[in-house]
Image (cartoon, rainbow, N blue to C red; front, side):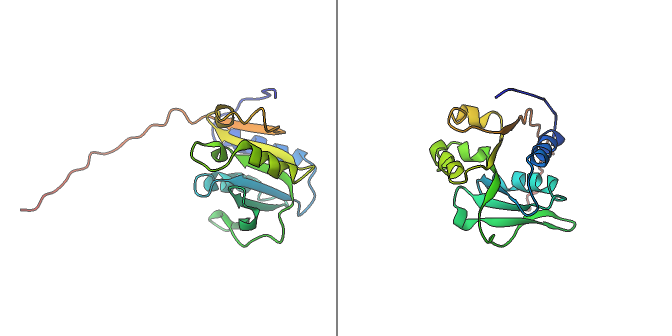
Length: 169
């Protein structure tokens, strides 16, 4: 793959993602299916899905790689994207592989992701990760991404107010 652009912040993740989806030639009701780790990837998936909210696409979250546990993503007014009911089927035109799947301790291997991709021939494949996780996990030679968005969260600054303990006598 060739690095084509560099962006900053959340718009730097969402804008190229939406542009890729818009350029993919999807039809109304085609599926964008996100595969990720429950909890860890979920907020990022909801954010990505929110960037597509005005497109007439069905968006689906698959926890880990278990398509039988898939949930549709839909917009809730004044809240954002939320997981809902199970979709009628899982038939992605775009597969979004979240980097959390490649994290140490997650029971998913690149070969299993490759098998999911192979089971949906013709689907475009997008990778979204942080801190070069796919590269660190050795997944890049095994999974051919049509688009890879790799963001950096650095530095992370934390400021705390000192806690004062009141001890009653």
